[in-house]
Amino acid sequence: AQSVTQLDSQVPVFEEAPVELRCNYSSSVSVYLFWYVQYPNQGLQLLLKYLSGSTLVKGINGFEAEFNKSQTSFHLRKPSVHISDTAEYFCAVSATGTASKLTFGTGTRLQVTL
Amino acid sequence: KAGVTQTPRYLIKTRGQQVTLSCSPISGHRSVSWYQQTPGQGLQFLFEYFSETQRNKGNFPGRFSGRQFSNSRSEMNVSTLELGDSALYLCASSRDYLQGAPGNTIYFGEGSWLTVV
Image (cartoon, rainbow over all chains, first blue to last red; front, side, top):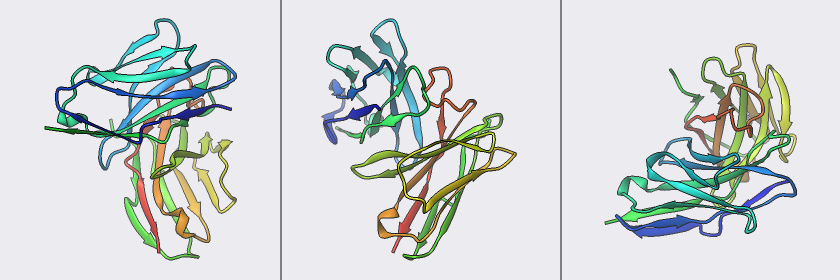
């Protein structure tokens, strides 16, 4: 089975500052990794995903994430955030062999202020 | 094209009652998954249906059930509601049933907010 840990439940940051949202996973098999974003009163939307190959993955809205197999991490970064980035961010994992379901972390609330 | 539609968006129920939530997937999608979202717990997988068959199930009690119709629309039912069932219930649809597969992007609805009093 897979599990995901998002250590930070909330991350406050000023507009135009950089941000990193942390995600660590646990799995005995190879995994696919995902980041989803949930804006207020909306469903989840895929930001980016790591399947294989280059460990640096670029997604929508200027976000990127880096897969680190040795540290079992998949941290999400953005060099300069905007007010509109305020949302809940979820890291998720699935096993490459079965890919039968996604396991989500508990989420990180990114609060961007002026 | 139309996204994933969930109804009702908000509802309040009393302990002991039952509730039925509905989900209409994106046209052409045959897989529907259900998640429960609560503060601090994140998203917990309930079950997944594909072509009217339950393909995967999470660790929820038997009070939680679901079904899928021939047009891929899905319903989930919670019987004998408890206060702890208060949550946002999210439905997600995808073309194939392997929702974790890289080529099978899942799309979420806006959810149904259930409050049990």
